[in-house]
Length: 143
Length: 164
Image (cartoon, rainbow over all chains, first blue to last red; front, side, top):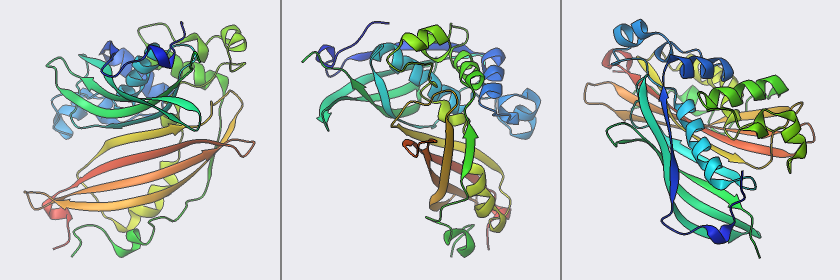
C-alpha cells in the first residue's frame, strides 16, 4: 500500500467507492466476528413477519466497517483514522449493493498533526445516502 | 409530562457504570479483519503477523472499527432499562469512535460507560421515539487512553407503551 501525503490531498477530492453486495455470507461472518446475533440481521422470517421489515437488514456496524475500508484504502499505509461518526438514517437490505464513499471537505493542522476532514456516506443502488457521517484522517507530510 | 423517561433513568445521566474488561486475542482481530473485508482479502496489517512485524506498529493491529465488538453498553443499559418499560422495536441510531492508539493482540482494554443523554419525541401514532446516547472510554493495560465510543440507540414505543 502506497503512502498518501497531506500535500497530495485537495478539497473536493472523492474517496474511491468501496462496493459490496452484502449477502448472508457477509452478514453471518460479521455477526460472528462482532458477536452481533440479532434476529433482524439473520432471520428473514423474523424480519418480515415479526419486525415487519421488507427483509433482513444489513448491520449498521458492518456499514461502518465498509466506510472504514474505503477510508483506509484511500489513506494509504501511513494514514490513521482518528475519528469516524455515522448516523443510520435508512435501512439497507441483505443482498443489496452498498457503496461506501466520501468527499474531502478540508485540511487543517492541529497539535502538529496534518488532518483531513471528510464527509462520508453509504449509498444504496438507487443513489440514496442511507448512512451519512464524517471522518477525520491524519496523514504524513512531505515537509 | 414525560412519555417514557423516568426520574430513575434520568438520575443515571453522567454516572459511570462498572468497568468492563476485555482481553483482545489475536484470533479475534484476525476474524474481524476477514469479516469486514469479505469477499475481498483482509488487510494484511490486521491479519498477517509477518506483515505486522515489518509495519510501523511492530505487530498486527485491530481494524479501525474493531471497537464495535467491545462490550460496554450492557452495564449501562442494565441500570437504565428496569424503570423504562417495554418498547416495540430498538435500532442502532449511530456510532462515533475516536481512536487515539492502536489496539494490539494481548491488550487488556477496560471500558467505562455512562448514559450521556435521554430524549423523547412524540410520534403521530400517540407513541414516542426514545433517543438514548451513551459514551464509553477505553484504556489499555498501561493506563493509556485508547478510544472513546459514542452510541445512539433509538427505541420506538407504541401508544399503549407510553404514560397516559
